[in-house]
Figure: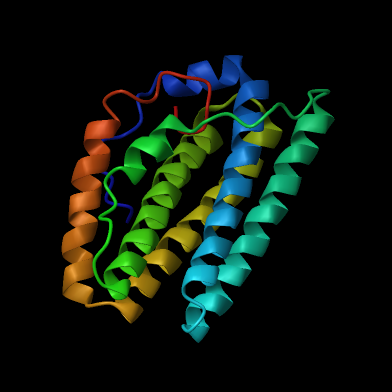
Length: 193
């Protein structure tokens, strides 16, 4: 369903498991950034009623996920660390086409968000299947389903407000570009690292 071209390095789950405090902190901040991204898209494109409705829902869900991850952090006796730069997201953002018509800008933003959700979904699936901690397995299974829904919502909105053929073509380009990034990621104790 996700169409990712290159899977996460299987060793990533071992790195994540050994550094679960770091991964949980990074995950919490990823959820917060996803909420902010949804809200900033609403601010930029308030004229699209369905987009505002869907992205409001996603933003609220992402903040709920932030709270859920924070509860997991506290339950394990950890503390929420400081937000760190997400190099994967920064590298992916370089692929966004700048300028051009407003409908193209919206498509780029939505596909960028869909790509992050797709990779997060894949990482959550790995954690839900591979991590030893049964509580976290169930937790990441639940979040994986939510991320898949967010991914498909972003793709659907891009097609609704843009030319579906252009969206499909550009999505394939995003998938191709993202696979080149994955050659250097999957080696750190962060959600996308």
